[in-house]
Image (tube, rainbow, N blue to C red; front, side, top):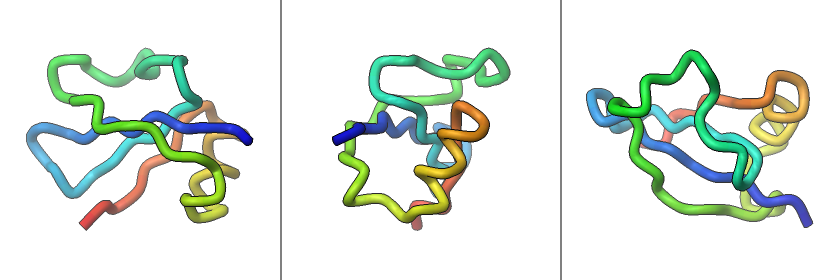
Length: 64
């Protein structure tokens, strides 16, 4: 089952950025602003996140 890495924005901790496991941050994301917060399997995430990563290579999610 696919897995996804979650990064949290340091300045806005309610914003999560998901990418495929091991792919790292997308080019637009400043590594100083994002902290790795773990990995989740596909079945634990909303379909919108999985679809977003498949289509764009990343997906944002409100993690509040």
